[in-house]
Length: 93
Image (cartoon, rainbow, N blue to C red; front, side, top):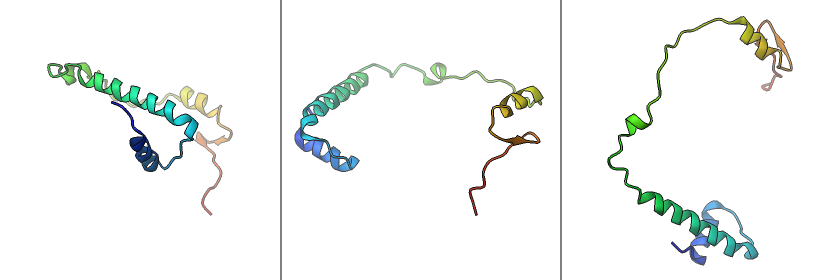
């Protein structure tokens, strides 16, 4: 797909940005390459792929545990802590 001056002007307006005249040709070329890349991706045959088998995440038991060494390790890097809590500055008056 060719990015025209009119399309680039619309994109500038939508993105609320201003592209300098000396960079417009480079931007048009780069955007054209991106659009062509996406068009190539759209041609990849994916209709026979079962997404559930590809993107499955193995599950594990959600078992709570109390490991004081982890809490102490995290808190020792905090600027301020007390009684196993982070001390943060007051932000609401």
